[in-house]
Image 1 (cartoon, rainbow, N blue to C red):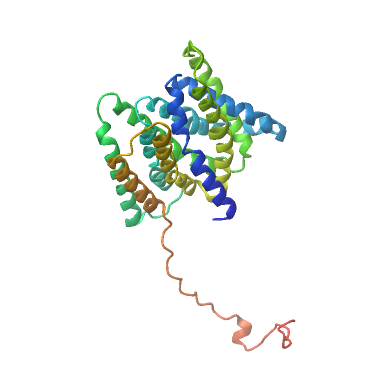
Image 2: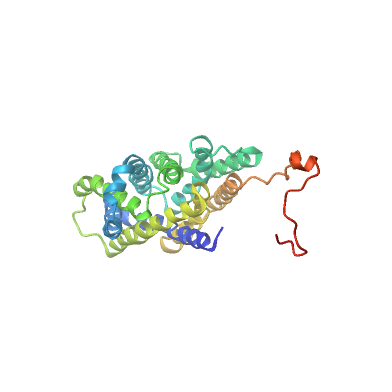
Length: 318
């Protein structure tokens, strides 16, 4: 990976590790629809003028509107609502750890739906099973009451996060980053505006909630999406999802430090299993041995003993 790739990877590992904390703070005072609306609106206000200034925005939308619509639905409008709604009942640490399953789903999606026909092999299959075991360790204690719905919402989020990069890499790779994400955020803002207006809080949210919404829009949306799409172009869609190795550690640390969430043995075991499974499932295949050289039949002039090449001097020059 290049130095630019490592920088984007490290940046995304941190930036997308803190939304779980901010969502948890905000959703205690405003509805999930309002959180998604505010996050998208702030991001769109920042990025849309820059996209317009580049020129050709309308032509880009008219040419690529189908994959752009799919990306907006699968990456933004669906997952952001399901994740936010799930955090009304799950801790930010649990949500962050479950999202670590994205690379595992990404491997399967790339193998069967993304056109990457790389053989899975025993190691990757073992990684998938280990990662799923980690998810099971984390989720089984929560499979009671309303938590089952929250876990299902996080699962939908994971599927969206794993498949959207494939759309970006295969169908939108030639679209400038700003001209992709700005229209998607604008569309999401319009879609969620009615629901946000209907559930707007009667009282002004606290400063902590407002700062969380602002940070979600500026840092975790505008800055993060520009960096993430550049990361996809730099290292590919499947490898880019490996940032979720780092995200859970940041999410757990933030929840423990700022929300007094407990770090239990179950969290530690599930994190180790999910991390190990994701590493194995996304690890590149071992290089095969060098192929035998293909014998080449000598040209006719060699078989006749003739050499049409000009003579070379001692330095090898013609």
